[in-house]
Length: 117
Image: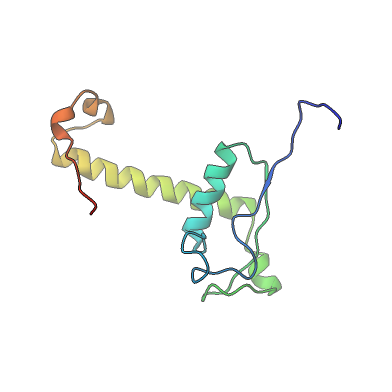
């Protein structure tokens, strides 16, 4: 084995035939895929391998759909996802009369245990 500091890590977040019926955690919607790929990138992945899916989530080789999957498309999806989270966080902060997430530091009085059973 050759020792090197360089590594290319490819992530394939879902297969071409798997669906939510086989694993409910598989990302299939554009937002789920964008979020999963972004998390993989943060973990060190440098390449992503995707299969195009139609509007019903079925794998397809339709070249028109495959052409829509570009780096710009993915970048915009990640941006939209984080912009949406930011908007939701601002709304939550406003309910507490806060303007910045930094105001949450040390505010254990705002924590509440949720029993999931």
